Amino acid sequence: MDILQLSHYLDNLLDIKEIKDSSNAMNGLQVQNTGDIKKVGLAVDLCMATIEKAVAAECNMMFVHHGMLWGGVKPIRGNFYDKISTMICENIGLYSAHLPLDMHPVLGNNKVLADQLELNELEPFGEYEGQKIGFKGRLKSLSVEELGAKLEGKLGSPVKVIGSGEVQTLGIVSGGAADILSQAAVAGLDAYLTGEGSNHHYHEAIENKCVLILAGHYATETGGVKAVGKHLEEQFGIKTEFIDYPTGI
Image (tube, rainbow, N blue to C red; front, side):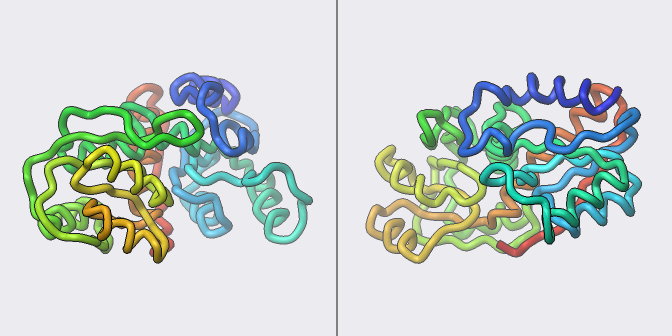
């Protein structure tokens, strides 16, 4: 299977064409290569460090959540040139899926988080550009401290909890989606989980009595690429390797 065939499969699997994103260039095949796909490097971010790790791991394709083309086409020079030239010289193709990977009902970042926390009665939640990109549901009643500790154990990274009390209902949108906290409060949820937030979100959580859980932008978005990798291994026998390069954010 070559990269054009695999990209066509991923386009359909992730519903690339139907999901609104701030830039269509974020999603789909970004860099082509030649030959059959032998091994796919799975990464949250496309950066020089993950490219170099993919080269060292003998990958000839990368599947990432945050791709190369943010904000449209730009001059090919400087660091941008370095990344593109390295990938072309090393014959590494690139496929990126941003919101389509967050939203996927089986393989998405938010579904993985929901499964890790054993969230039940799942419903779409978190409106963005007219579409709901996360989930809400119910879980076994836990204190916020217990929930934070459970999440730290699942993600292997620090979790910040703002607020107190018991949590039975939870909304989830991975990454940098703290602005959706207001929707969680309106929906009457006990808590809202995302990756990172800003200073004012602290006050918003306290004043609305909706616990805000910040588990890291990077950490909350590792699950989707891993799930897609496992899917490709099972469907096509393609080797994959998760390329871990945490940002601490």
